[in-house]
Figure 1: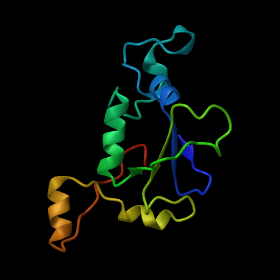
Figure 2: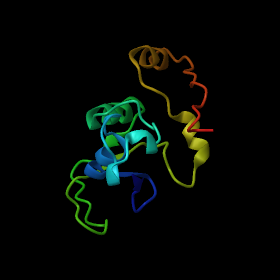
Figure 3: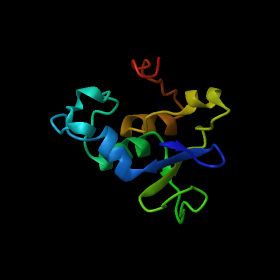
Figure 4: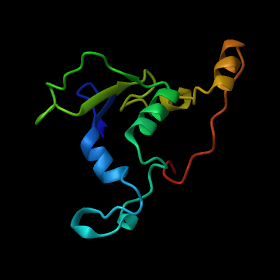
Length: 123
C-alpha cells in the first residue's frame, strides 16, 4: 500500500497485500516461518474484506485507473480515494467515519457521528 502520485489516495498491490498481510494465520511466511512474524494488522484473511472496510470508511475505487504512473507492472494495482485522506492534511482524518447503517442515519438526521478510540496501530 502506498500513496498515489498526487498524495490523495491509496495504491494497493493486491497480490503482494494478500501474500504479505492477509494470509491465514497457519500459512507459512516467506522462508517457511509461520505467520507469527507478520503483525496482525488486519483481522481479515480475504482481500474482499479489506475492500469492504475501505468502502465502509468512505473510500471509493478510482474507475478507469490503469496505474500507468506507477513504476513496474500495473496488473493487480488498485486505486482508492477518500476526500478526507490526504498525505499533507492529517487534520482531515477526523472527518473519516465508519459508514454503518446507523451512522448514515445519524448523518442524514444532522447528528454527530463519533469515532472509536484509536487502536494500538493508530497510536
